[in-house]
Image (cartoon, rainbow, N blue to C red; front, side, top):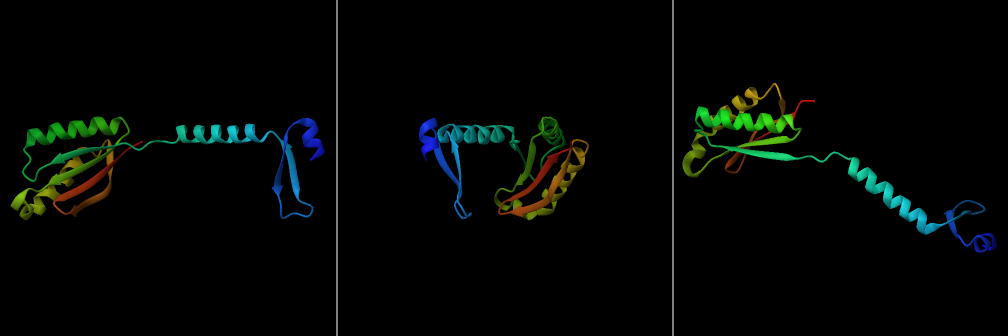
Amino acid sequence: MEIANQLELDLVEISPQATPPVCRVMNYQKFLYDQKKKQKEIKSKSAKVVIKEIRLGPQTDDHDFEFKTNHAIKFLKDGCKVKVDVYFKGRSIVYKDQGELILLKFAQAVEEYGKPEQLPKLEGKRMIMILNPKK
């Protein structure tokens, strides 16, 4: 403690279970500042996942389908995940098979740029499929 007082620094106990306890003389505020700085740097370098959503209907026409696939291709080229869903309104839930066919056709149309993370899955009134971009 005398050495720490002479150097005007802090005495930090590193390993209290050791015999004798291990201590270190350091500027504790600077240590905390450096630690926060490292955590911020790690956080900024981590990749942020962006999910874009495209919504289709069970009776989506060819032109609309191509328009939406072009958007999905653009999103996949940018490195975003694409969540494609077919929304069933009212009694159109009867056409679940049409929705699944549209999603599979969509996956086939963009297979050059992305691959499906999960196959079409029905959740309530929506059938969802997620596409990952290819590296």
